[in-house]
Length: 378
Image (cartoon, rainbow, N blue to C red; front, side, top):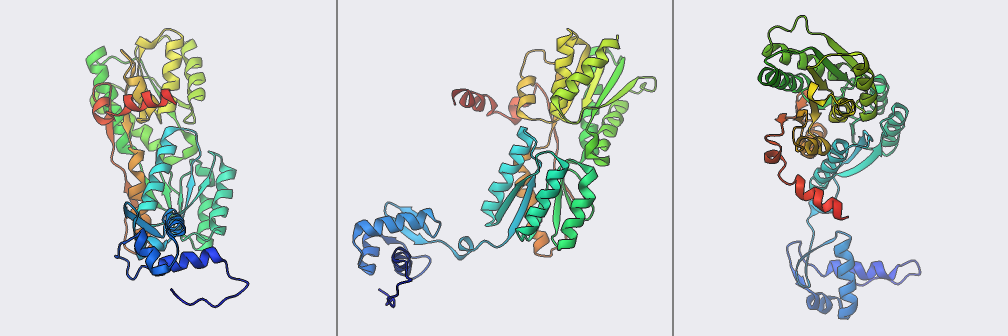
């Protein structure tokens, strides 16, 4: 045992814990409960409680029944503090991005400070200020309002905090996320091919459900849809195209498409949506008025709700372009560490996209039915 000078300021439990840690003579040494008791002079009951607590606090690894070793230096010290401002919208995509970032940060031994933007511009500004006050080394910004992006960027740059923007570009940020034009092209080609097979290429209308607040880059997604559609259906010049700002929301899309269908007599309508929430809102509008057979809809993100809909017999949600948010964390944390290490990085890192359809949804997401059963039991 080490000699500790008595003092009225000493906390005995901390002294006892330090004695247990000192019993390990190297980081690779594995000690049993009785070994620690022998080296410290504490009784086994006290040793067990101290070892259990130090393990729970992350100072010791448990490698067997009552066998412990010191954690590595890498795990003992958090190398960076990284801030993550989550979009805050209550949808599975945002939740999965957050969960993947948290997992990747833990694996990389990064301290993650999370703020909630609540899908609101003013809150996003406050969140950026909060992360700056937390003295983060780098910030990851995931907010959907382009109008406040310059102000948020100015805050980070003034504070000298490098930052990454997920899915919505911000001035001065390194971009990580969707390749919007490619994702739009995938959706447009699929709509065109479906119309060829089922309507012999005849289309009366095209509805585009946009997300205007997100700015120019997501609008490229809509342009990609039209480019992909025209690539497959050559004669589209006279095809009426209606654009609605559904704000990426189910209810807004439902109301806008419902209103449009009151006056439209078209019987072959293709719908390209900025995300799955607006795609599902549009689908419900068609179903409400008994016109589901008149439409074919493609969404974006391949969220669980859309995947469930595609499993329904004869659903007119014929596809959704997957972004795989469950993989965002590994890429964005790796990019963050490269930036903090001053390694050269590309100004934009794009995620991979995959068209998910009723025919292949079980291939890409085989565990969905099991998760649905588990959720129903909770």
